[in-house]
Image 1 (cartoon, rainbow, N blue to C red):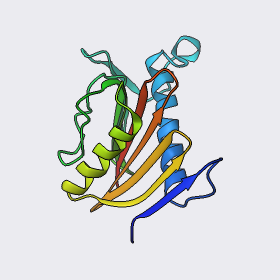
Image 2 (image 1 turned 120 degrees about the vertical axis):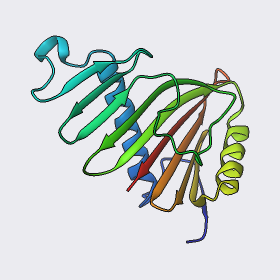
Image 3 (image 1 turned 180 degrees about the vertical axis):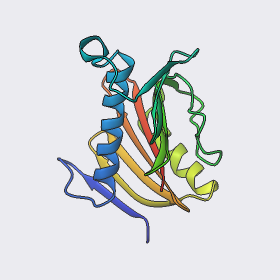
Length: 177
């Protein structure tokens, strides 16, 4: 598939690949925030069959028979692919990884930087291409940029958002089907 480039001034119209990826990233961020803040543990406790390990880096790993998910670390997840770009001038705010025995394996991070959004977008476009990823789609909505790329069975999705306070937030999700 050829790279598609979309510029949208208002809310984006449907995109078969980008919308589900963005939704998944938002859900992962929300779940990570929920679990790292204690979730419902103070109300109902940890669900039966789920083990919780608090890690030295401040993260927590939740596991059961189907696999595990680690949330809350301020570093790249252990399962971050070696050929996936790492932005050097950003501070990781949140990271998570999953290692499911069934379904998708994946990882995600959220970072902030004082670099302008276009510099960040240019970095990811260049690095993805140089590391053998195929950029499938890009989209621009106001100050939000989305890039979706694939390599083998992996999908890399990055969302870059500029803010009025001259901060750029970068959210990346990688899934391995």
